[in-house]
Every structure is written in structure tokens, then in C-alpha cells.
Length: 201
Ligand SMILES: [Zn+2]
Image (cartoon, rainbow, N blue to C red; front, side):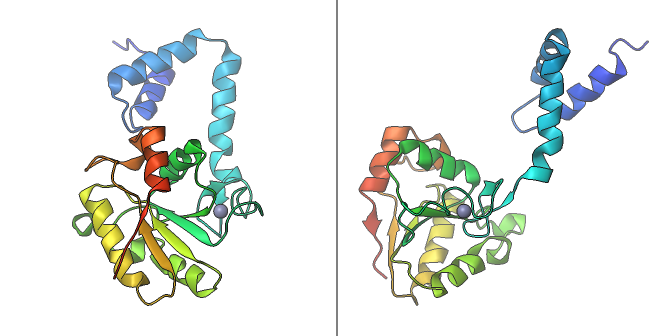
């Protein structure tokens, strides 16, 4: 006997494929949407259908953006000589929330993870080097997480960036070991940016 209407079951199945959402939460969310006015589900559906059509990668920093360049790369008041390298768009959002960083970003879209087959070619590392070679950069702030893959990625970048005449810095201590920066609290992260340290080759 079919106890759950197929349309509801399909929604539950789709929602439970999202990270951090198990079948129980997916069921709760689906039932919630069903109880709300149809317009609310319609508006969510519109956002989902427009998602891939209206958002692209910024050709400067590789952030998701509706415009190219993104609002940060296109902002003349920001310091375009200071580039903060992060793993994921969520890390950039976390740093932006501190309100302390006035430079621009470079998003790697991942970390080195040989076990998962992710090497330098899979990340936006070549693009970072090309960006440096185009000139006018003074400082690269490595803001990968203090996890094992985050540290390995930072070490790899330090090696790669040695040949360039610019200062390479790393977030200061304060971010607990093993912590993903997007989960660091705003003050800790802000302080780690302000007190970033130089890396001597
Ligand atoms: Zn950008």
C-alpha cells in the first residue's frame, strides 16, 4: 500500500540527498513546505530552477556570482594587491562577515587530497599563478583551513609561490587545529587575519 503520495516521496528523496540532511529532516522539511502556502514552495522552486542559469564563476577570483567580475573584484575601493586564498566560496563568505579584510580573493574550489584523486590540477592553482604573473600583487594570504589537507595545500602553495617576488602570509594562530575556517567565530577569524604572519622560505 502506498502510504506517502509519490510527489511527496520524490521531494523527500531529493532533499535527503543534500549534505547534512537525513531522511528524517527531509521528511520534516517536505511536510513543512506542504503545509505552507503554495506560493512559498513555488518561490523556492523558482530559485532552484534559476540557480545554474544565473550564477557563474567570477573570472577573477572564481567566486560564484551573477556578474563577472563579481562585486568584490569589481570594487575599486578594495586592495587588489592583497589576495586571500581560500578553499571554498563559504570560506570567503565567512571572512567577508568579519568586515576586516579589505583585499580580494582567490577560491581554490577544494584542497589537495591525493586519496580522493584531487591534485593541483583539480584546483585553481594554475589560475593563481597566472594571476600573479599578470602583476601588481603584493601579498598572498593563505587562508586554507588548519585541517591536514588545508595545511598540506598551504605548504604546497608556499613552495609554488617562492619563485615570485611577493609576500606570502598565513592566518595567525587562534584558529583551532583541525578547524574549517567557515566554522570559526567571527572575532577569532578577524583576529587571525589582522595578526597574520609572514612565511619565510
Ligand atoms: Zn571575483
